[in-house]
Amino acid sequence: MGEEQNRENIKNMEDSAASPQGASRKGSEPNLPHASALPQSSKLPDSSAKKSVSPIAARSWWVALLAALPPLAMLFFLHWNPYLVVLIAAAVTIAVALTWGGLSQAPSPARTGIVVALTGIGCLLATLITTNLTWVPLVLSWCVLAAFIAEMTRGKHRPLTTWSLSSTITGCALVAAGSAWGLATAYPTMNLLAMAALPAMGLASLSLALPAKRASIRWLYCVLSGIIAAGFLTYFLLYGYSDLALAIPFAYRNPALAIWVMTLGLGFGSGLLVACINVLFMVPAGKNYRWRQLALALLPTLFISVPIYSLARLITG
Image (cartoon, rainbow, N blue to C red; front, side, top):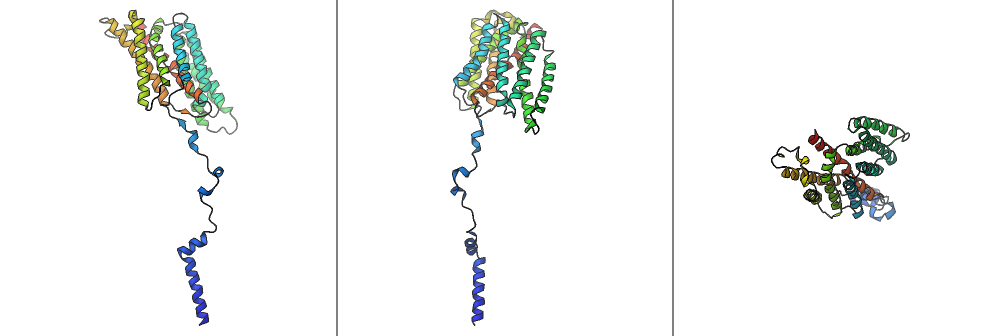
């Protein structure tokens, strides 16, 4: 009897160990403490602090003011000395190049900035010297080669090679659009068209400081600012320039209406360009966040030269 009782006790102990309650009691000892019980320093860092800031966030007042100064200064110097317009375009190119590496989050911002600055200044000088855009693709191709050379000099491992190279080449293409400002000294019609586009761009850049909770409101601010600025300048200054209407089919029937259509169209396009660039691009948060916003806000000043030059060529032939 004693031996059978011992066997029964052993069996009962094995059954209790195999049961869920027994297993939980048995396995509770080696378990680690819960994650909430860990000290705060041992937790993983929050990655939300490195997220890009919303593109519809309002720019600081000084960012909007500095973005509006170049187009307004170009408007002031346009007929007095067009060469100063080229100098302002060169200054904007350098300012964009210095902060493009941070804006595009390139692994090597210094190398990216140097290549982008050389591209913009080289294309601008090529158009100023030759008074045409023939040499711009050649300069841009050599700068693409410079981007590859800069990438090879980064070191042995070179992390994020594709990202770095693509951001550099993209910056080169963006600043090359401003090369058309080098033709401001050779095309008087381009200067007349710029007189409608530049104030529209300046007022649209100032509207970047206005608060907006939706991207559509930001678009509305910029577009309305561009139309209002172009309308005021047309009413007080450009109303007598009938040469502006030569590219519109019904210009000979109603030149005044043709001028209004062209200048208000330029104002609409200028405001839309400011809205597109400042809403579609994301600004990465970080130490130089405001300067990255400024680089983004200065880009439309370079871009607007391309449609102005295209319309000037259509008018003059």
